[in-house]
Image 1: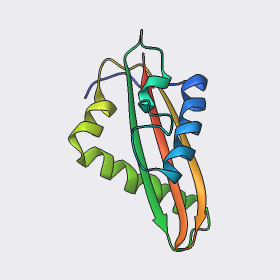
Image 2: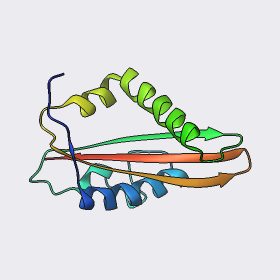
Image 3: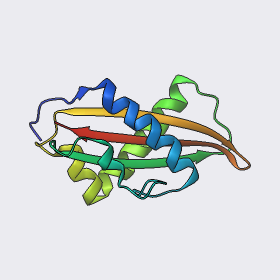
Length: 118
């Protein structure tokens, strides 16, 4: 797309950490307190949120397993027009990413939040 790389932002990372844990319990862009996930970011900024999760029957956290999980999630977000538009928006200059790991009865669930801002 010819856009500059996003800068990893510690404040957005902290918001993503909260959101990734929240979506493990309730899968929604609406937070448990009734606000939007993007509302965590100052309203004076461009802001956006992508959420994803993937479940594996077994997951050993090897480099190849982590890379495969990241590739799979990236492909699914890219295939969604609304998620992809967040990924390539020229309005965003910063990103925060966090993955919450949950052990479930059906395996390991990786819940990831991506918070975008300028």
